[in-house]
Length: 259
Image (cartoon, rainbow, N blue to C red; front, side, top):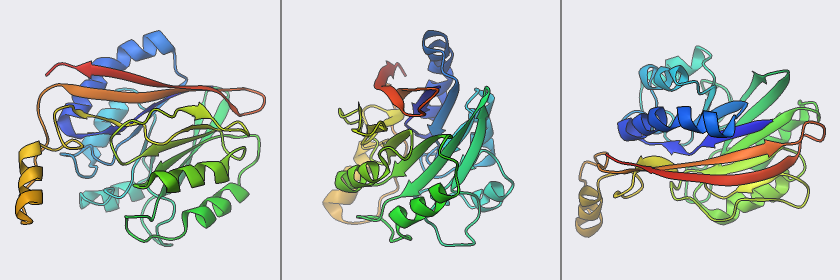
């Protein structure tokens, strides 16, 4: 199975870049499934029906999210309608939506799990125990991918090694800055600390730098706006062995789209 996982898609510039590049990437790499992190689809903060459906219309089969999943009020109702979107698994019981999704990929099934870190982030339920509980109910034969949406590199790496050999791939999201450590862990799980984003290159993790700088300098509120100009495109291509369900390769794909 070949998975194309696209990093955090940031606002309208990110959506436009995906629309432009995805047809070529499909032709060049022939992925069996395309997944994207969509927690910043709507103006760089949250997800809406319209923005999610736009991505599905491009042929993206599933979306993962993260700590901004509830930034748009309509997401609460929308995720309960059952779209192929996963929110962090370790939210408390009763939270709308699902943290685990199983999708059909040709003759195979892929389990997609989203989990949120706790270091420097909202203190949700323990992601390690939440993952244990989710994986306990899954057959070992299933392909599986976990999006670890977290701030701290150490926490992401700890979760990856905890899952090594138990899932097919662990991809980090949230920081919007791609890391140079794509590799196969000792027991066969593909891993990267952060895939990066699809968003404005000349920005502060997607936002216009001026407002961000003013907030740091003045320590007062200044409204953030989505950045402009060229757009960075970051994704990973993961190949999984059909018999072992373990990873064969993982590679970072990068491009820049002109404004």
